[in-house]
Image (cartoon, rainbow, N blue to C red; front, top):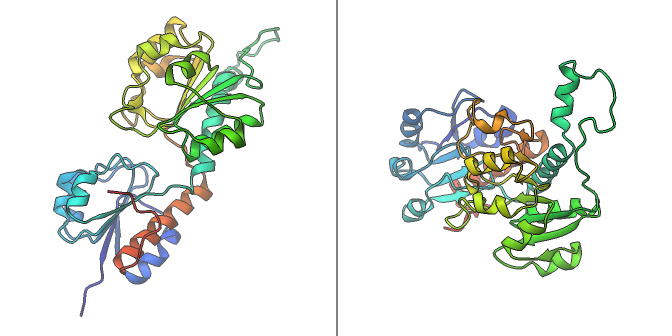
Length: 323
């Protein structure tokens, strides 16, 4: 009897999201929803796997990929895939898939929510009430910054960047963007203006980073970048942590070089609770939840399972990564 292809899933997912896989394949899943699969378990499971369904926090490097003698596909539950060694995957004819498009609007919502929370000091104000500090009213009590009619600068004008720009039009903001390539359609449809990176960070009241992590973007927001920003500027990062020099960001926030920051991603994740950035009231910090709505995460799981089933049955996956 021919064995069923074996699929290993590196985090506990709702059983309902995996129904189509259970029907046709042998499926095993790491038991924890919150803790990453241990390295030794990942390597052991990969040795017998035809497919892996992975999280962005899983390091799928050469060692893992070479352990999978039968491995045909890695489906990453994320739009990003910098956790996967694409070179080795290509050498071994392993298909890599991600989950673009389905998370565009949800991630744009979160990025704009971070902008608003940092601008209007929403988290700080909520804690102020909960901790019993609200004794009276004063003219500048927890006064933040306006968002409407201000200038937003978007670094990384992909689909999420365009969705964010669309939201900014509702606040009648001036929209600047910097990208590897110009986006004439976005310029026409959204009134966005293409500018250099330096001009963007100098002119913008809100700088939002949505760029992928590459050799060129790593550390792009550093001490020099923050010095060029307005003292009233608010920096938002909803892309990847390593695009920012966190020590430089901390110093810029403490010294008043910039006003505040909203961060969904960090250089090391999970970030340590004693990290200097987390001691600052002018930092809104979230645990990398850009795409984390129930609806979107279920769509992402559905896309991963579709891609796995497609590859294992000799069909074309919907969202293969170009290797």
